[in-house]
Length: 107
Image (tube, rainbow, N blue to C red; front, top):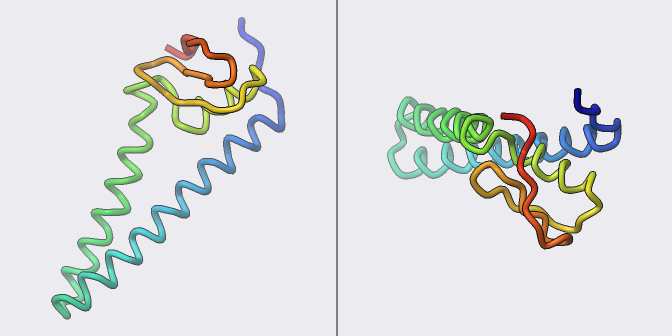
């Protein structure tokens, strides 16, 4: 059985998730404004904003299927290995600080 991640690593992963959610909220607001000022149709503006938000959220949450981790989980895995940067690549975490590839244990 694998060890559970520490408290601060999980807090860091949650903050990364919250930051990406906040970015989606700003993208939704920008889309709403852009479509509204172009068409002056509130229904189209709301529909476009919803597509941006829910599409982005679906894309982000489906990373669990594609690479077996979200961006926050991947980077918290790399942080627990004391590396400086992380890039998720096809189910592996490339930690630039260690210059090696670690396979994700969450398959």
